Image (tube, rainbow, N blue to C red; front, top):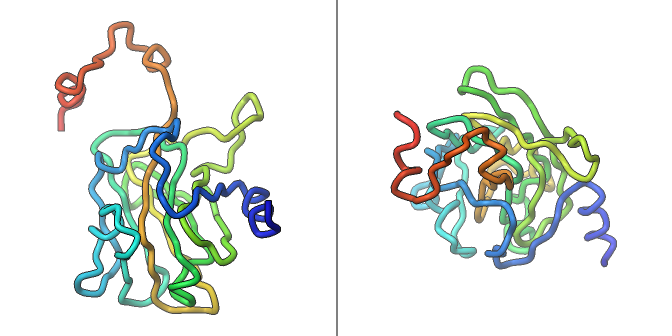
Length: 196
């Protein structure tokens, strides 16, 4: 492990490389939400965060701080986030400090984690919460309707930012832990599990 990888690991950030790993134990719940950004340049909007193309990126176009807001139709357990950044190409557009906020709506968001990054390159995975679980071998998930990623600072004091991809990862849970003795397991039934 390099010194930079050791520094990432000590902050709870896992470097996953340039291709997003498909066999993660945490389910990708990104598609369940409505996404918005604080600002964007034409052609570099929120769709670039979810298009699985490392050559496209969200490019902010406004005053700092920049933020990405993810709103779910019901309360979800959010365990981790995965973000794709490319310091070698994006230089001062690369985020160096991320603040994660969560809540039931845009008006009651609370800070749950601050992540500091040093020249990130590729997909990084980190826990949303900084609160350790009961076993002491990980962190508790955050239960929220809304999660917001704030780009508080960029490398070399850059103003605008580039983010090449973002994924919201849910908690690993078995159906019995939800308290439902007869859970819906088919896609057709889970689609109508809650009323909007």
